[in-house]
Length: 339
Image (cartoon, rainbow, N blue to C red):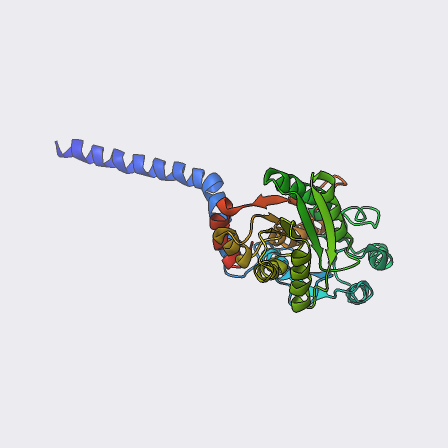
């Protein structure tokens, strides 16, 4: 009897050993991969690179003015991707095309490994982007310049098609029964802004007028919108082209005692809250965090694997119409500065 029990125990030991070997074999494939994925995710979350590629330097040069929160969100996405991809990230900006081009030239002189630029003022940027391409620096354009990007030699363009975005606004205004709208342009010479308003005009069945304001002077912006609403009482919609100007338009509406609906391009925490409260009708989100993140990621993919995305056409990150119904879900992300 003792011999039988001994044989049973021995068999159990053998079975456990076999199972252990089998499980180890499984973990060497799927289990190991799962562990590797978890490790990479943990590294990225801790601010460590998830890749072992060289420490390349990528630069982003935009047409942002000082204090524009939209570009803070773009940078946040770019910096997060840079951490993951073991990239040194440089950033410079200027609202004037000539000065923006000078910043690009500085990055070329630094011999960066990749360049991300905006083309809000393409005529001022054409020559310097051409210099970067001829110097062997891969270029990706973001946000503005989708029509010029390919001709300038960029690998891809990431952003929303401004005309299509404007058309979606015109269609949304039609759904809401609006008849007379004003499109507020806060940066003269910005081709993307002109394309947005032109897109609205293309699909909007009502009357649309452009209103040019000095976007660097918020009191002037408010006064201009207020004066328009007071002089043209039948205006029932105001479309601003950036999130910071939406709140100013809301104040102008109140001062003018107007019933016009305020709508805006772009999304941030303030816009999400205003959508929830009903101060804003809708917003057009082009996902700036994604623009920054994807631009850095695509440059890394090109340096690492010669990958190019888009097939010669823009990689669209918008437009997405955000209303009160969607605002609550997105507010959490807007609060942390990623939407």
